[in-house]
Amino acid sequence: MFIVIMAGGKSSRMGFEKPLALVGNKPMILWVYEKAVKVGDVFVAVSKNTPKTAEFCRKQGIETIETSGEGYVRDVTFILREFGEFVSLSCDIPFVRVEDINEIARNFRGISLTGVLNPKIVPKFVKVESLPKYKGWILVGLNAVGFEGEMFLELKNPLLSLNVNTPEDLELANRIAPSLNIV
Image (cartoon, rainbow, N blue to C red; front, side):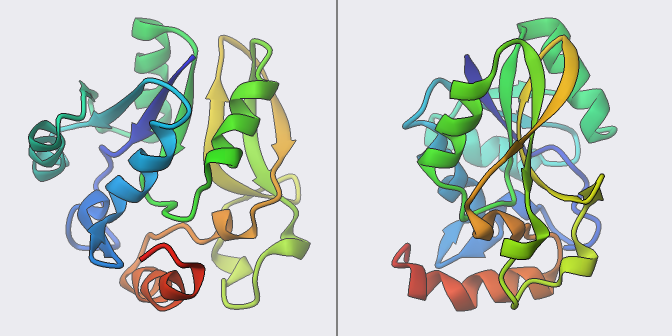
């Protein structure tokens, strides 16, 4: 199973291409890529919305997939139709761990898996009310995409809740990164 880092969105709340936002003086896309490549073959989904990200990936030798950039569901559907089942990983969760990605891949059995967190484990410095929720779970941007159904997989890494979507989220990521020994 291969991994696709989703990096083709408009980043409208950031005002610039989010995958290139610096966390600890390194583009966020690299934090995610460096974990994913330890698990499997990795591609970065880019679009007309992220030309600088596409160029950055080319310079780094990272393979890309060109999508429409017209929304996550449309892009994921295109990738599934063209390439088959895969692990989908958002470019904006810099504190994803190798174990998180492995857990999704290991538990995938052909039915789509949506990675979720129990709201009770979300750190106090993350605004729970601003997180995407579904049926009481926090959605974390780490999924296994298949042709059938949908199941949830509860993950245990509370820092998956820090999804960098705004300048404030980026500031928070940069404040906590040194304490995690990732800088």
